[in-house]
Image (cartoon, rainbow, N blue to C red; front, top):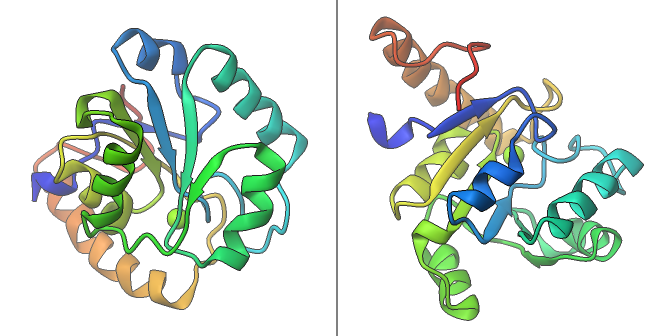
Length: 173
Ligand SMILES: [Mg+2]
């Protein structure tokens, strides 16, 4: 079950201490797209998000979008945020994570992954030893496939709550 436990848990991508990640040796941050950096119905990034991505770059970190959504969904955000992006990533499978690490010649210890789902974003990255950061989903609506994941997520969250290792809304770094 601990393979689903994130290393850090914050309210949103705006609460993450990116400088601390940089200081800890992180070089690249893999951002989930839907419900992590934008609502599922957003077609373009907000000004606030653009500014955040510029701040992240300015401290010397490389933000990358890593989404399970297809190219058509991901492309406008890749273009507007001026970042590299991986679409159809099949998280939690390891394939795309490994491809990214090979492509940029980075070790798992140099990567952090930020996402809103335990079963895809956290599980996928934890398996490889990538630092995981869970954030609350931006909106309560999800894609259909995600609502199935959320069902299992609730079971895991109950398990964690019973053992006092994780509680919704109790953030930690
Ligand atoms: Mg998501």
